[in-house]
Length: 220
Image (cartoon, rainbow, N blue to C red; front, side, top):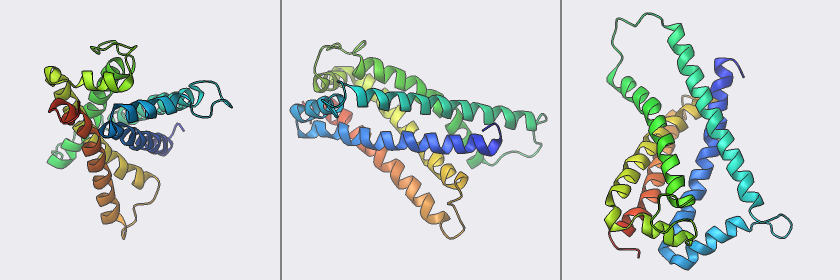
Protein backbone atom coordinates (compact mmCIF):
# COMPACT_ATOMS: atom_id res chain seq x y z
CA UNK A 1 0.00 0.00 0.00
CA UNK A 2 3.07 2.24 0.16
CA UNK A 3 3.46 2.37 -3.63
CA UNK A 4 1.74 4.90 -5.85
CA UNK A 5 -0.41 2.19 -7.40
CA UNK A 6 -1.34 0.95 -3.93
CA UNK A 7 -2.41 4.42 -2.81
CA UNK A 8 -4.40 4.89 -6.02
CA UNK A 9 -6.15 1.61 -5.32
CA UNK A 10 -6.95 2.79 -1.79
CA UNK A 11 -8.45 5.97 -3.23
CA UNK A 12 -10.49 3.98 -5.74
CA UNK A 13 -11.91 1.52 -3.20
CA UNK A 14 -12.62 4.09 -0.49
CA UNK A 15 -14.10 6.37 -3.13
CA UNK A 16 -16.45 3.58 -4.19
CA UNK A 17 -17.57 3.17 -0.57
CA UNK A 18 -18.33 6.88 -0.33
CA UNK A 19 -20.19 6.90 -3.65
CA UNK A 20 -22.39 4.04 -2.46
CA UNK A 21 -23.11 5.97 0.73
CA UNK A 22 -23.97 9.11 -1.24
CA UNK A 23 -26.43 7.23 -3.44
CA UNK A 24 -28.22 5.70 -0.44
CA UNK A 25 -28.12 8.99 1.47
CA UNK A 26 -29.62 10.85 -1.48
CA UNK A 27 -32.45 8.33 -1.81
CA UNK A 28 -33.17 8.70 1.89
CA UNK A 29 -33.24 12.49 1.70
CA UNK A 30 -35.78 12.37 -1.12
CA UNK A 31 -38.28 10.79 1.26
CA UNK A 32 -38.97 14.29 2.59
CA UNK A 33 -41.12 14.77 -0.53
CA UNK A 34 -43.46 12.05 0.76
CA UNK A 35 -44.06 13.89 4.03
CA UNK A 36 -42.35 14.36 7.36
CA UNK A 37 -43.64 11.04 8.71
CA UNK A 38 -42.09 9.17 5.80
CA UNK A 39 -38.73 10.83 6.38
CA UNK A 40 -38.87 10.23 10.15
CA UNK A 41 -39.79 6.57 9.59
CA UNK A 42 -36.76 6.22 7.31
CA UNK A 43 -34.46 7.79 9.91
CA UNK A 44 -35.91 5.54 12.62
CA UNK A 45 -35.47 2.44 10.44
CA UNK A 46 -31.77 3.19 10.06
CA UNK A 47 -31.34 3.19 13.82
CA UNK A 48 -33.40 0.05 14.49
CA UNK A 49 -32.07 -2.07 11.61
CA UNK A 50 -31.69 -5.75 12.62
CA UNK A 51 -33.35 -5.23 16.01
CA UNK A 52 -33.74 -7.26 18.19
CA UNK A 53 -30.85 -9.35 16.77
CA UNK A 54 -28.58 -6.34 17.12
CA UNK A 55 -28.83 -3.53 19.70
CA UNK A 56 -30.28 -0.14 18.77
CA UNK A 57 -28.16 1.77 16.25
CA UNK A 58 -25.60 -1.06 15.81
CA UNK A 59 -25.77 -1.24 12.02
CA UNK A 60 -25.76 2.53 11.62
CA UNK A 61 -22.73 2.82 13.90
CA UNK A 62 -20.85 0.22 11.86
CA UNK A 63 -21.69 2.09 8.67
CA UNK A 64 -20.47 5.36 10.21
CA UNK A 65 -17.18 3.74 11.30
CA UNK A 66 -16.59 2.30 7.82
CA UNK A 67 -17.43 5.66 6.26
CA UNK A 68 -15.11 7.63 8.55
CA UNK A 69 -12.31 5.11 7.93
CA UNK A 70 -12.89 5.45 4.17
CA UNK A 71 -12.72 9.24 4.34
CA UNK A 72 -9.51 9.19 6.41
CA UNK A 73 -7.81 6.65 4.14
CA UNK A 74 -8.97 8.51 1.04
CA UNK A 75 -7.53 11.79 2.28
CA UNK A 76 -4.30 10.11 3.43
CA UNK A 77 -3.79 8.51 0.02
CA UNK A 78 -4.60 11.77 -1.80
CA UNK A 79 -2.17 13.82 0.31
CA UNK A 80 0.55 11.16 0.01
CA UNK A 81 0.22 11.04 -3.77
CA UNK A 82 0.28 14.84 -4.01
CA UNK A 83 3.46 15.02 -1.91
CA UNK A 84 5.11 12.26 -3.91
CA UNK A 85 4.25 14.02 -7.16
CA UNK A 86 5.70 17.26 -5.78
CA UNK A 87 8.98 15.58 -4.80
CA UNK A 88 9.24 13.96 -8.20
CA UNK A 89 9.06 17.43 -9.80
CA UNK A 90 11.36 19.67 -7.70
CA UNK A 91 11.72 22.10 -10.60
CA UNK A 92 8.57 23.49 -12.13
CA UNK A 93 7.85 22.63 -15.73
CA UNK A 94 8.73 25.35 -18.19
CA UNK A 95 5.75 24.45 -20.31
CA UNK A 96 2.45 25.54 -18.85
CA UNK A 97 -0.16 22.97 -17.97
CA UNK A 98 -3.27 22.91 -20.08
CA UNK A 99 -6.20 24.91 -18.75
CA UNK A 100 -8.27 21.73 -18.32
CA UNK A 101 -5.52 19.99 -16.38
CA UNK A 102 -5.03 22.94 -14.04
CA UNK A 103 -8.78 23.24 -13.52
CA UNK A 104 -9.07 19.55 -12.60
CA UNK A 105 -6.16 19.77 -10.18
CA UNK A 106 -7.71 22.73 -8.34
CA UNK A 107 -11.11 21.04 -8.18
CA UNK A 108 -9.68 17.84 -6.71
CA UNK A 109 -7.36 19.53 -4.17
CA UNK A 110 -9.33 22.54 -2.96
CA UNK A 111 -12.66 20.90 -3.67
CA UNK A 112 -11.74 18.08 -1.32
CA UNK A 113 -10.93 20.55 1.47
CA UNK A 114 -14.16 22.48 0.86
CA UNK A 115 -16.17 19.26 1.00
CA UNK A 116 -14.47 18.20 4.24
CA UNK A 117 -15.33 21.51 5.91
CA UNK A 118 -18.90 21.30 4.63
CA UNK A 119 -19.33 17.78 6.02
CA UNK A 120 -18.40 19.08 9.47
CA UNK A 121 -21.02 21.84 9.18
CA UNK A 122 -23.59 19.41 7.80
CA UNK A 123 -23.14 17.06 10.77
CA UNK A 124 -23.34 19.91 13.28
CA UNK A 125 -26.51 21.18 11.63
CA UNK A 126 -28.66 18.20 10.63
CA UNK A 127 -27.16 15.27 12.56
CA UNK A 128 -26.24 16.69 15.96
CA UNK A 129 -28.44 19.81 15.84
CA UNK A 130 -25.72 22.01 17.36
CA UNK A 131 -26.28 24.86 14.90
CA UNK A 132 -29.82 23.89 13.92
CA UNK A 133 -32.73 26.09 15.11
CA UNK A 134 -34.65 23.02 16.34
CA UNK A 135 -31.73 21.44 18.21
CA UNK A 136 -30.86 17.76 18.67
CA UNK A 137 -34.11 16.63 20.31
CA UNK A 138 -36.30 17.54 17.32
CA UNK A 139 -37.45 14.93 14.83
CA UNK A 140 -35.10 14.50 11.82
CA UNK A 141 -37.66 15.94 9.39
CA UNK A 142 -38.18 18.98 11.63
CA UNK A 143 -34.44 19.59 11.73
CA UNK A 144 -34.21 19.39 7.95
CA UNK A 145 -37.10 21.78 7.33
CA UNK A 146 -35.82 24.22 9.96
CA UNK A 147 -32.28 23.95 8.60
CA UNK A 148 -33.29 25.12 5.13
CA UNK A 149 -35.99 27.57 6.18
CA UNK A 150 -36.26 30.59 3.84
CA UNK A 151 -34.85 32.80 6.60
CA UNK A 152 -31.66 30.69 6.45
CA UNK A 153 -31.19 31.13 2.70
CA UNK A 154 -27.46 31.47 3.21
CA UNK A 155 -27.32 27.89 4.54
CA UNK A 156 -29.04 26.69 1.37
CA UNK A 157 -26.55 28.70 -0.70
CA UNK A 158 -23.62 27.05 1.12
CA UNK A 159 -25.26 23.69 0.55
CA UNK A 160 -25.67 24.35 -3.17
CA UNK A 161 -22.02 25.38 -3.59
CA UNK A 162 -20.79 22.38 -1.60
CA UNK A 163 -22.96 19.87 -3.48
CA UNK A 164 -21.81 21.25 -6.84
CA UNK A 165 -18.22 20.84 -5.62
CA UNK A 166 -19.04 17.27 -4.66
CA UNK A 167 -20.37 16.67 -8.16
CA UNK A 168 -17.26 18.05 -9.85
CA UNK A 169 -15.00 16.13 -7.48
CA UNK A 170 -17.01 12.97 -8.02
CA UNK A 171 -17.04 13.22 -11.80
CA UNK A 172 -13.26 13.24 -11.98
CA UNK A 173 -12.86 10.81 -9.07
CA UNK A 174 -15.14 8.14 -10.55
CA UNK A 175 -13.34 8.34 -13.87
CA UNK A 176 -9.95 8.07 -12.13
CA UNK A 177 -11.19 5.04 -10.19
CA UNK A 178 -12.17 3.34 -13.46
CA UNK A 179 -8.66 3.95 -14.76
CA UNK A 180 -6.99 2.74 -11.56
CA UNK A 181 -9.00 -0.46 -11.50
CA UNK A 182 -8.15 -1.11 -15.15
CA UNK A 183 -11.70 -0.79 -16.47
CA UNK A 184 -11.08 2.16 -18.80
CA UNK A 185 -10.06 0.40 -21.99
CA UNK A 186 -10.03 2.18 -25.35
CA UNK A 187 -13.44 0.90 -26.35
CA UNK A 188 -15.05 1.82 -23.02
CA UNK A 189 -13.51 5.22 -22.36
CA UNK A 190 -16.37 7.28 -23.78
CA UNK A 191 -19.03 5.16 -22.06
CA UNK A 192 -17.30 5.31 -18.67
CA UNK A 193 -16.76 9.07 -18.93
CA UNK A 194 -20.44 9.50 -19.73
CA UNK A 195 -21.37 7.22 -16.83
CA UNK A 196 -19.21 9.21 -14.40
CA UNK A 197 -20.78 12.47 -15.55
CA UNK A 198 -24.30 11.07 -15.39
CA UNK A 199 -23.83 9.66 -11.87
CA UNK A 200 -22.46 13.00 -10.67
CA UNK A 201 -25.34 14.92 -12.24
CA UNK A 202 -27.97 12.62 -10.70
CA UNK A 203 -26.41 12.98 -7.24
CA UNK A 204 -26.16 16.77 -7.51
CA UNK A 205 -29.82 17.11 -8.56
CA UNK A 206 -30.96 14.56 -5.98
CA UNK A 207 -29.15 16.26 -3.10
CA UNK A 208 -30.19 19.78 -4.10
CA UNK A 209 -33.88 18.99 -4.60
CA UNK A 210 -34.89 18.77 -0.89
CA UNK A 211 -33.16 21.93 0.41
CA UNK A 212 -34.27 24.03 -2.56
CA UNK A 213 -37.83 22.72 -2.24
CA UNK A 214 -37.85 23.66 1.45
CA UNK A 215 -36.31 27.10 0.92
CA UNK A 216 -38.81 27.95 -1.82
CA UNK A 217 -41.78 26.65 0.14
CA UNK A 218 -42.57 23.55 -1.91
CA UNK A 219 -41.93 21.35 1.15
CA UNK A 220 -43.09 22.67 4.51
